[in-house]
Amino acid sequence: MLKEFKEFAMKGNMVDMAIGIIIGAAFGKIVSSLVSDVLMPPIGKMTGGVDFSNLFYSLTGGMYPSVAAAKAAGAATINYGIFLNTLIDFIIIAFVLFMIIKGVNSMKKKEAAAAPTTKECPHCCTAIPLNAKRCPACTSPL
Image (cartoon, rainbow, N blue to C red):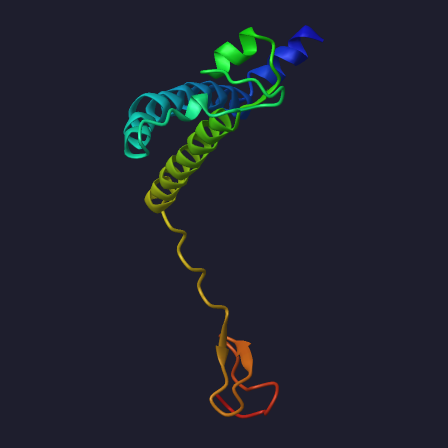
């Protein structure tokens, strides 16, 4: 059973998938850092210094300066700012992956078109085999 498991785990596509997941997780961290550390500060500055990660609604009615302060006080909050940051992360990751896949697909070798196996009868426009001497539909000689 151990030998079968080893063969299963070492199949090429299984190892490729594991490597893809690990690289994807690392890529996600990079994009999250790009969004939170590079993109969001200028966006916050353009919107009057709003820090999206501290946008929240307190369900208990209290006023708190940040999400951390509200959580420390034990208040129930709806953290829509953190959701906005996560949504922006997702959109950027999806766009970057789209561009990568588009680039990889453009580099793939295009398959050659299959050679035709039929031709068209000049008299009745019926598809007939290439080496036919007479059209089976109209019986015209070719």
